[in-house]
Amino acid sequence: MTEDSGRTRVCIVLFLDIVDYSRRDVAEQVRLKQMFNMVLSSALGHVEPDERVIVDTGDGAAITFLGDPERALYVALEVFDNVGELPVRMGVNLGPVSLMKDLNGLDNVIGDGINVAQRIMSFASSGELLVSRHFYDVVSRLSDDYASMFRMEGSHTDKHQRAHDVYSVSKAVRVGRKVAAAQVKAKKQRRAGPDTTFTPVERTPAQVFDAGTHYLVSGYSKEGVTEAVDKLAAQGGKLISPLSQVGRKWLASVTNPKLAVEATVEELGFKRVITGPTRESVQLKLEDFIERGSTLVQEPELADGMWTAVCEHV
Image (cartoon, rainbow, N blue to C red; front, top):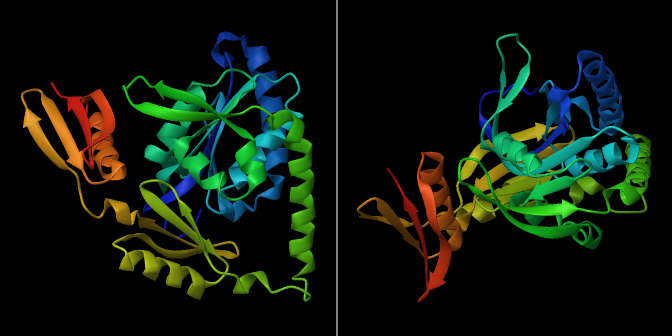
């Protein structure tokens, strides 16, 4: 874990568990967990220790990735490629988390980012990988190959009455070996050093990933990331976490400039009518109320140039 533990950052979280684990006898639980640990450890072999935080959840694990957004997808695909008879389901989300130590002094992760990853996983069946809209919006823009792997599964509502748009990765098993092989090749190339026939990667511009309520800025150059952050700030975005280096990359997260103008809330009895110029501003306010116990009445809708949503409170 990095030295700035405790502050909030936007990360990718992969949540996995063994289906019906608690219903099995102890001997079978031990056998399945040992197999699970072996498969997951092998899949994580391509991820540097300082770029991920692993939390053992008993019947599975939650892995927070501090580097490239697609790392979680690589690991999930490799798990599927080697899972065999193991009944595993997975969920991936991009969102805010805080890194900290638990009472035993072990690395731990808390926050909405990991909570939503678990809820996305809970919608999956054995042998299925589901991802949230926030993760899909980022990774599907990295390449056409990634975008073609996902299929929209619609909206699912969790036990807190919070709606989640969910995407499935139906071809994960077939493409797993290909992705794993590409990982090994890329790792060997990094160890061999940069190819002098091409522009060094450190000189390439920073990448900006739209995560809905936030932007994740990533790059090998501190100056490049700073420049991208400054551009977002000029548009109204605000720096969420200080610029930090994870492995070879520099990372920062910035609020979405579209949310610079907050939505307004009108109280009508037990109902709250939320109105704003952008869907993002209304959705952010709506999710805040739902997290505090309100019930969704109407999803954000566009009418006469303004977005409106309705929730009900007790």
